[in-house]
Image 1: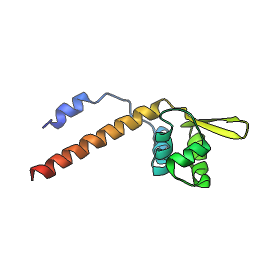
Image 2 (image 1 turned 90 degrees about the vertical axis):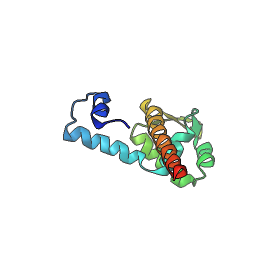
Image 3 (image 1 turned 135 degrees about the horizontal axis):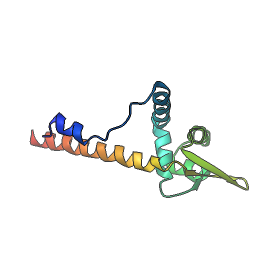
Image 4 (image 1 turned 180 degrees about the vertical axis):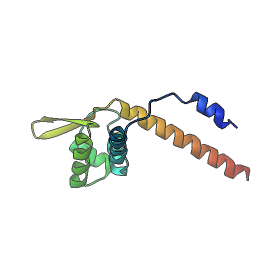
Length: 121
């Protein structure tokens, strides 16, 4: 088991954020705190898709998917382009896949440990 002192030494040093910056960070996480938005982002990991493809991939309704796409675009997480009558979306923030990988990897390790503890009991 790792001691807390060792853990703290491994953490990168960052300057504390001011209140305005913390508000921005909180808003970013709030946008990402919606499961349908995460489904949409996940559906875009392999590249650009149009709205119809995203509705099918997420099994959402057209209205619901469009509303969430608008929120993600307004937050500059996604970008959109129009081609004729179709609108295509892609991930525009390169930190999003990294963030998802980090969070998902952490959750996977935690769940694996929990399963290991249950099996040992």
